[in-house]
Length: 490
Image 1 (cartoon, rainbow, N blue to C red):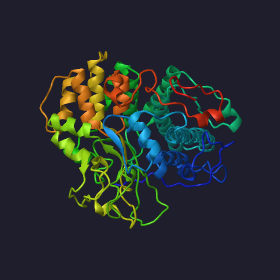
Image 2 (tube, helix red, strand yellow):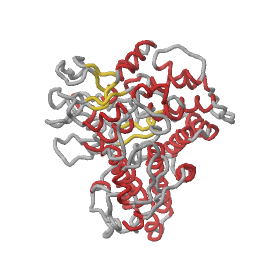
Image 3 (spheres, helix red, strand yellow):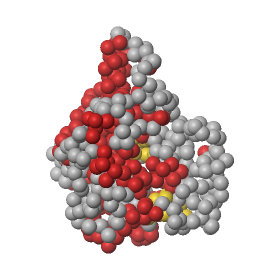
Image 4 (cartoon, helix red, strand yellow):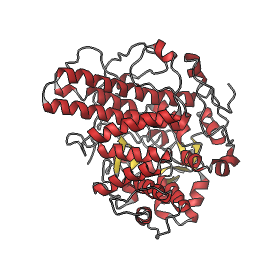
C-alpha cells in the first residue's frame, strides 16, 4: 500500500495582522517563535504547513466543488433539494458577488498563497543559520516546493476571478486592505517565474516522501498553465519533457488511476494527500474532497454529502460514443453492488465514481467515506492530452520524446479501449471531456475554447459575464481597491 503522509505539523498561527482576507486555519500554520533554524530537520516544517493548507475541510470541499465543477454541463449540484441551496445557483448561473461559496473559494486559495509565502520567507532564516552543504540544498529545494504550491493557488485564482491582488510576502491587515489587483498578464508572469524556479531547483523525486512535489510536478503544472495562457510552444515543451523522462505511464486499468491502492502511482504527478491513518476519530490529516461527493442517504459509514453528481447529459454523451470503460468508472449508480452497495434509497441516482472508496478504507464508524482518498490534481493522461492540444495549435518544438499529437491522444484512448482517431482539435477536446470528467476542468475548458455560450448558454451562461466569477462583495468590504467584475450586480 502507498500512503505517503507529508503533513505532520499543526501549530499556532502567527502572521502579522490577521484579517478575513487571508485567514489560515490552525492546521496550515507555523509558530513564530521556538523554531531552531539551524537544524536541518526543521527545514521542511513550513512547507508541511503549506501542504496542509491545500487540504479541504467539509465546508471548504462543498465550496470548492460548487465553483470548480457544478457550473459545467458534466455535473449537477446533487445532494438534497433543501441542502446547500446556494450551490444550486451554479447549476443555472444565478450566483452573484454575495454568494458565500464564491467568497469561501477566494479565501481557500489565498490561504494557500499565505502559507506558501510564509514557507518561502522562512527559507531565508534557514539559509542564514545553516552551514552544511546538504542543508543549504534542502533549503532551496523546500523553497522551490513552496513555489509550486503558490503557483497552483494563483493559477486557480486567475482562472476563477481574472485580475486579483498579487501578494508574494506576509503583510499586515493594513497592507492587505490597500492592495490593488494585478493584470492577468502579470499574474501569469509571476506563476511562470515560480514554476521556472521550481523546475530549476527541485529534484526528479524525493526519496523520503513520494508524495512531495518535484521537478516533474512543476513541469506538468507549467504545461497546463501555459495551455490556459495559449502559450502553445511552452505548453508543449514542458509536457514533452515530462513524457521524454520515461518516469510516468498510464495505469493499465483506468479505475486504478483513482483508487486508494494506486495513489502516488505511475500516473500521478500532483495529488493532495489525505489519510485517516486507520484512526477512528478526529483530529486527522484528511481532505474532505471525496467525502463531500460520497453517496447521500446511504448506510454508515459508506456515505457522504452527495454533491457534484454526474449529469444525465454527460452519461448520455459517454454512452453515445461507446466509452464504456470510463463511463463505468466515472458514474457510480444507485443500487450498484461494489464492495459496498449503493442503496436504492440513496438520495441521488448517480455519484462520482472517481472518488469511490471501498469499505476497507472507511475506518470511522460515522461518515468515514473517502477520507483515505487523495485528490488528484494532475495525471499523466492529462499531460499527454495537453501535449496533443498544444501541438495541434501549432507549438513550435521538435519533440524530444518522439511523440506526435496522434500518439499522445491515442495512447489515452487505447487505455480506454477505444480505437485510434485523427488528432483534430475537436477529437482532443472530446478526449479531455471523457478522460477528465468531474476533475474540475470542463467549465474552464469550455471558456478557454470559446464554447461556453454554445454549450452552457441553455443553462443560463451569459457571454461577457460568466467567463469569470465575481470578486466577492465580502472581500470588497475589506479592500475597497478591488474592482467590480463586469456583468454582475453589486
